[in-house]
Length: 214
Image (cartoon, rainbow, N blue to C red; front, side, top):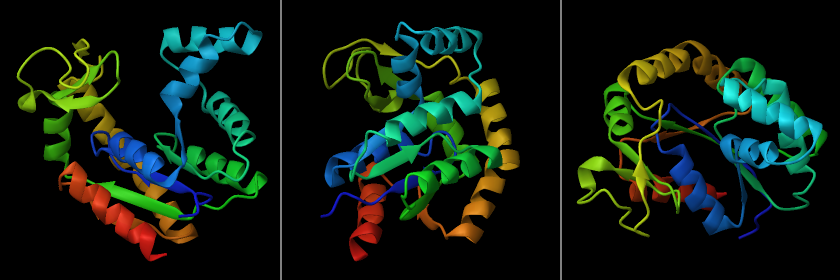
């Protein structure tokens, strides 16, 4: 299939956006843009902006304008390749900046998916979320038999913000902030809603079926 189309994934923390983005990028040959990875790559660069990003990350806050400056740089490298984005558009101001980046680069958001999961399931998923330090895969602690990564044997860790207080704060932000993003995109170009309570495999199949129909 032509890999020049673009995807935006929306949904609460714990909905599985990152996992689905990786699967979709691999299947369709898309570039997966992740805010964390872009920030880390910029923070190790020995220039003024890289040092500013590193200091901001250490303080726990990176201005949205900086992030979108880096996204624009990534877009300039894409050429005809399509892109899949998750994690950049939690606020109305951010989705408007992202739309501007697409327009400046002559690209369209061909698919906007909302992976929806009820809050109780989100809390369960995030409390039990584990990550591998080496291969970066994500696992559910309830499915693990040891403290080592079942894929590569690497060390497993828990994200600092995967605690109940932080999770509830993120859910409140989602209700107050990201709901405005969803309304904005519904009016601007439409959203395809996906039931995120399914297995990873079933969510992936449903998203792919929507893409392949077009």
